[in-house]
Amino acid sequence: MELRHLRYFCAAAEELNITRAAAKLHMAQPPLTRQINQLEEELGVKLFIRGPRGLSLTPAGKFFHEHAIQILEKLDTTVSAVRRMVRHSREIFGIGFVPSLFYGQLPILVRELRQKENLELTLAEMTTVEQVHALKAGRIDIGFGRLVIDDPEIEQQVLFEEPLMAAVPEGHPLDGTTPSMQELAEYPIVLYPASPRPSLADIVQGLFRRRGLKLNVVQEANEMQTALGLVVSDFGITLVPEQVKRQKRDGIRYLYLAESHITSPIVCSRRRGEKPTETMKLATEILDVLVENRRRGKYP
Image (cartoon, rainbow, N blue to C red; front, side, top):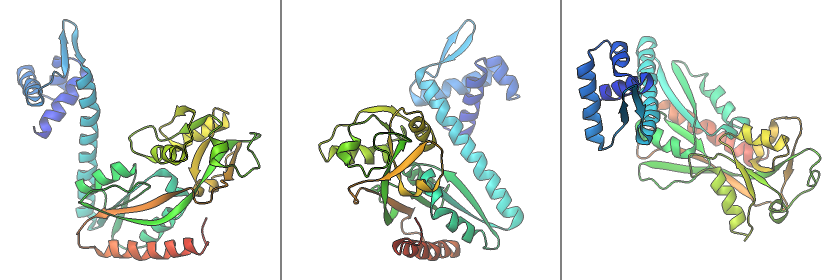
């Protein structure tokens, strides 16, 4: 399989018409049809249903289309970044992160790194699982997430454990209290992210499960902000990392839990065995200071 197969397939999937797709690609229709057939033969699945009115995607075709788009977009991003690097003689340093970390120390790390000359930072929101894939593919250089993942190619370090807090709507029966896990289990709960898994949602479910508590999950949201919006709507309550309390949002109360040891790890991921660059050394030095400040209570 070559990149041209992905580009040809995406054009056909977007147009759902071989004639229009061929025109878009500035090629004749028969060669495009052959390329699509070759791709289906290599995959061993049918990607399109051929009908008198054109094409339609099979379930496998829809799935492949979603991922093919991501691959091509990431390739285009990488090519653009390399061209910028050569044009400006700048080093590119990629950081992947889960969104909740941008309420705490991560912006300080970014600000400090941006002071380095001839360095271009690229930032990407992604789950820990996505960070591992991105590190192995070379799309990022360092990742910050919440899951410890066993992968021989990835080196992980737990920077610290962050307390989890309950986010409840203003005026909720738990508002103003320090609820226990058992009390939280009595109310509908919103989990996030819904996908990809595993994620913080699995950490939260595990915390309740290990205590023999059954959760009433009324909704799973893909984004934390969506989950908080559901909380404001009195759809349910949710658990959030402590750093999120820095976000002032009307209609929400953040409550510390009765069990102080209910936490989520902050995990730093890098490629294993790779000789650190000067930028990586600088990032490590900054992280050491931020983690020590955190331990001393200098940051929330």
